[in-house]
Amino acid sequence: MRAVEEAEETLRELRSALEKAGVVLPSLGLDPVSLAREVPCPLVELGRCSVETARSLTAALTASPGVAR
Image (cartoon, rainbow, N blue to C red):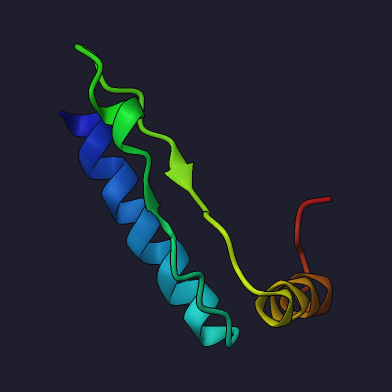
């Protein structure tokens, strides 16, 4: 289950980074279907957000240096 532990840690890091940028994605989590396989292949579910949150996310991403494009 190492892949699940790594996915959970990555999720915590992502949530923290988003919060520092002023963005909260209420539905952020791990996709349960991707965890239900015999050999889990975790996917991060970003979920849905309001238009205001989408604008905040866009602003945070475009203002951050070194963001992969």
